[in-house]
Image (cartoon, rainbow, N blue to C red; front, side):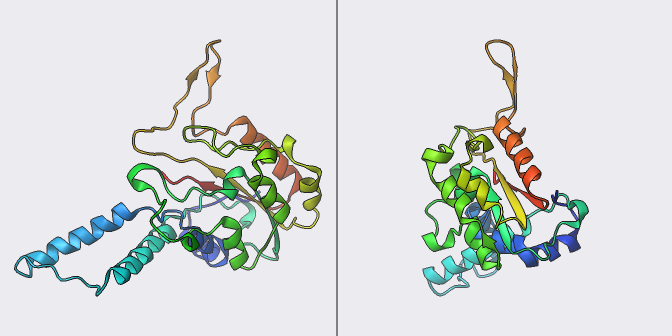
Length: 247
């Protein structure tokens, strides 16, 4: 089962094969416009101090400035992908063509956190690539049956569980068509688990229900997520877990 590790050379190898294309296209942190503005603001103050209080932009138009901001945010996304563990040197992938992507979050990626860190509405729709699109651009063939299943709420359930959670689909709900699709798309599996955060919306840190049973905190796997990991690892030899957790 493949996860991530924190070695820079391994990250670069993986990035070239899969994860930077995913990060670039899906723009995991494309919403960090506040950070970009802070950089520009610091530069502006320096420029004004050395130009008699006058500011001269490096860009000739609003459109050119906007394009530059997109490149800054893409760079932030590239540098924010972390490889936590790489068991059995699963990554970079070799000899892999057909991939099954699991997780309700895979069909509706978190691109950024909420509040002032949101990415909604800042860019044109063509900048918000899906994970499947990004994998296809990297040369992989992605299981379309799973994709349609997760996009169909009547089959896989609603996306939001409230708060910071994705309402993960328990594998007991997988249709016969989903299970049959593994035969073709079996070279590797991706499991996408999502959490998000926002100002005024801290992650739930646990507690007890009315009967005194201890409740899980937000960074623990839900029962459905744990069941999904067990199901996928039982059916695929090569498994990669992607944590989609912009905060």
